[in-house]
Image 1 (cartoon, rainbow, N blue to C red):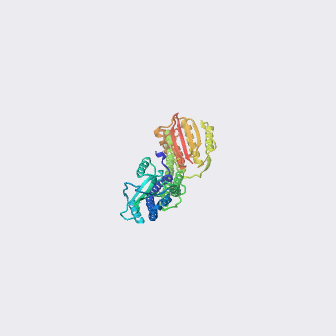
Image 2: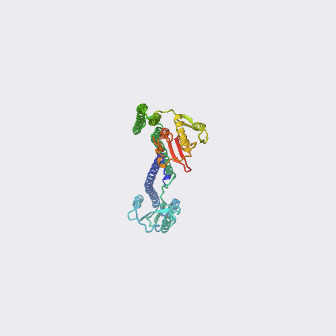
Image 3: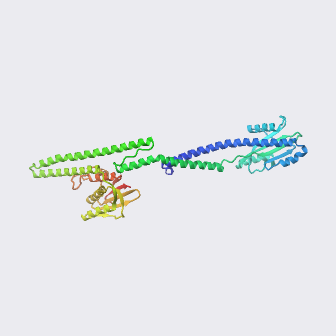
Length: 464
């Protein structure tokens, strides 16, 4: 179910506003339509009563022998008049405020005395039931019940009957004009117009509000690739300006922290050279040749570690200018050099792949991974792929791999799987750390994993 829900802030806001305002608009239309229908019904009944009163005055003042002709002339398809010995309305009961008001209005307009019989009936009739005056009241009651049972829409009809001075009954049957249906073209157009306006305004407003979020996302990606990237531009509403300043302060603290750590590491490594030099001089005074040789080898190893540490610190401190590089050609040149040295290297040739990076740093990463594969895994197989999201450089070997619990540890500085501490067999433990540092400076990731068919796979993922 959740996968069908909107994911972006823009679509979520549009749906919330659209549903909320649509429901509110619909309920308002229902309330308005009910009040309007009731008002029109009362107004229509009053107008029909006024017409009945006017016709009644004409018939009352006309001689009895002329009344038949006048009644025939006044009859219309929606307004029937008849004179009969008895009332056409039977068992009529006044029910409702509207019916009472109509009866009082008719008696006043016609000028009927209070003792003159007057029957008024107001009821719902089906649209397709024909004209009211054609049926007996019992038939109308039956039609009304059938319309309710079968769901036939109905409208109001008014029937009036009162006695003339000569004792006969004057009967009227007419329809009260009905209001427009609720789902009229106007109401549908109103609802559609409201929905379109909500969508357009929501898209415009939300896009303006989400611009700072996109700016923060771009700044975060830029910081992940280059900690010395330019700070964010402080602009927009006060809240956005405050967040931008906080982001710039965080970036500044990160830069100072990295610089301080690098400078401290470089200072310590540099200061260690002095005691090593003194120990080398003193080792010359050792008479035992074997002991002196072992001391010199230890000092050489310490000096080599210090040199790599200084190089590691220098690598983090320096910022190489980035430019477009043909990664395929870069990898191919490294493989050619190793093949010339007699190493088993297989590169899956691919088309030209341009990628913006630090050329020297990227060459160092690829060289380190391929040399490790050749040195510890007998042979190296390299592939380079590029898709819409990222560049991938994969280096595989045929060696024994690395224990699962040490796959992440080998990326730490000075950690070695080989416990003898012999740099010819286990190295110093900075190669992968330097490679990882360079890859992370590009906003990428270095992943080590053991292959099912045997050997180690080193994957470099660099986002575009």
